[in-house]
Length: 623
Image 1 (cartoon, rainbow, N blue to C red):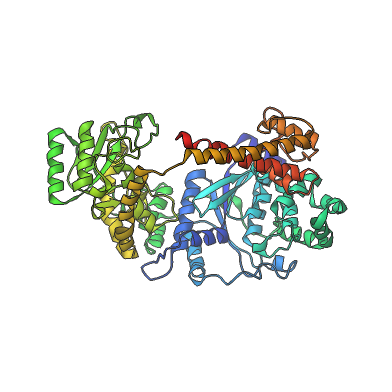
Image 2 (tube, rainbow, N blue to C red):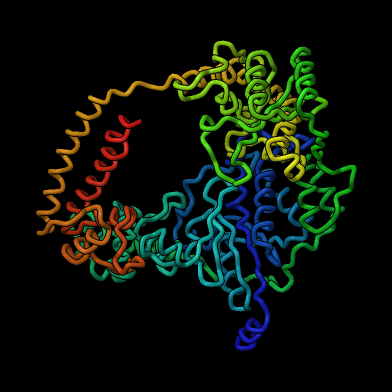
């Protein structure tokens, strides 16, 4: 061990990523709901989500090695402790079940070790590899969607936790686990589960104790054992349940504890990435129809993609402006051709965001089938107005673009009214992308153009001569036929044409019309709520025995912890030296059965009412 430590002082620690295969396959399957099939008819949606996550993992963290763990057979290790463990779970969906052998084959094609052990869960394999890797001088990344894995976090073991689907992740360290659970450290996570249980795994815990109460008890007494030792001090129904279910709490903690002693025959030193054969990977992934993903994986390994397999790259013609641009636009409108437009705003180069209706556009970029056109100043406004009235217009966000000639602010002149526009001549790429895959959250023109499920193409870098708006216009026009094809194949084309595009114009008019706010009625409501807030402030001051500013975190901290004597164990101090009073911290006290709990609840209710008064009732009349 000493030799390992000495070695790590002289050389940077290598990073090994371990993927919880079952967790991520389930998340990918449910995140990508639309059917996806290989040419031979096998379902592939979970595989697509899983390997998108895999690519993101490697691109984001550049691990030196990757291992993937899977459950194998019944979780006998825990069933022996708790016979009903996971017994309530329904059988796995057949289309997901058939993708598990496929994901393992694809991982092997990538030369990623697949580790599974009869009767053991992937959690325990991750736990064993985490502790072994840490002891051998590695930094370990555990990629999973299971929160019980947070107990493994240390300075050299981080949990890459999926928050939404498989695209949004957070990095869990000992500090972030502590923050998340309001004072419950990784070491105490099993104690936390011992009290609250886990319905998804059929772990009982103590009835009536949820996560907030469990965290508050653990923080107050320091551990589950100490909570049990002081069970007589816990009041009310919660105390009764605790005293009646001590054995359940201890068993639940044992079941929730990740094992780190699985008998694995795995060498971390042999886990290296990338070491795959690009031809084997191309063959395996292309057979499933994953053309764009195949190219990303091959590039991930540092290999060149053969030219005939390369993703489509957006080609941009030389921009035209002035009279030449006007003539080409005239021709496109007269021919009834689809053209795409995007705005380059005055402050775009400074990287600032402006309201869409606050600035006259500096430049409108228009892409036709043959040309890229540039209109500046008044010519930009005129060109856009003409396209709105007469043209067939494609845009990444058509409503935002049209607000340039039909402003939200009704005090400004509308060059084109919504009634003068035809929904049949509008194509919004973002709306089309949403209809095709509402879960992805990535609907910009650039994201759709580069999405392997749409085009899988590549975009050129923006320059001073050809800025991002010009590229967006050209990419939107290139996207349109592909999106239209996918909408028709998906069965969503009728919804897009008959509902979404007409509704776009309805919303455009609604946003310009605005809504009526009665200042007098709002003032009456503000006065009534203000009187209620005044009574609450008086009650809180009386309970504290002193007047203080409830909105001052420092003064409120003094009252909570010095005057009312709430426990501070596990709480962190702010930079100014007082304990935090954010909602996450004091919510636990409001429900924790303390003598001062009703006053803490009053503070939270005061905050809610004050926010309604200040943010809405007082502010809306000024708008």
